[in-house]
Amino acid sequence: MIEGALAGVATTALTEGIRFLYQQAQELIGSWRADRAAEVTEAPPPVGVFLGELRLVPDDPAVLDEHAGAFDTLLTSPGLVRLTLGHAVAPDNEEQMRAAVALRALLETVSGRRITFVGESGRDTSGTTVVRGEAEANEVGEGALQAGVDADEIESGADVTGRSKTGKLEKDAKNYGVKARKISG
Image (tube, rainbow, N blue to C red):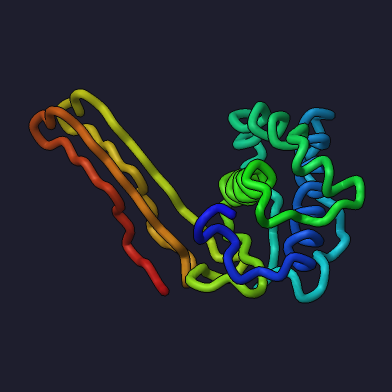
């Protein structure tokens, strides 16, 4: 098994959870392809599988433009397709576990929220806002701003990471890894 990934999650919960995430990913990318507002079913996730409250619909559906290919790859992964055919997760199947971890990470990326299974330790609960920002440039011009993250307010408990790298800063230029007026947590 992938060391540390999904450690402590019961096989039954992991199987039900990954099946649910797979189905939600299909609906999310399907609605995007049909040029409808991004949506997932109203069906609640399986009880006792996820820690916290899931919200998988992205705040900005345009984020799906960038990740459609990754959805296609994961949704055709043999290890994940086997789950939809009634097979259980095989924790010792490296390919299947990599696909499961990648599916969760992709859904976290597009939704901007953490997805955590019951039994996982060291992760924020599902629904925690995840903000990642990276910016890199050879040069930031005079008076310009480059930022990995620049927000006036970030939700309570948010997981925020910003990185900004530049080779040369011109006069009065600014370069921030994270810049926020308020961060609660």
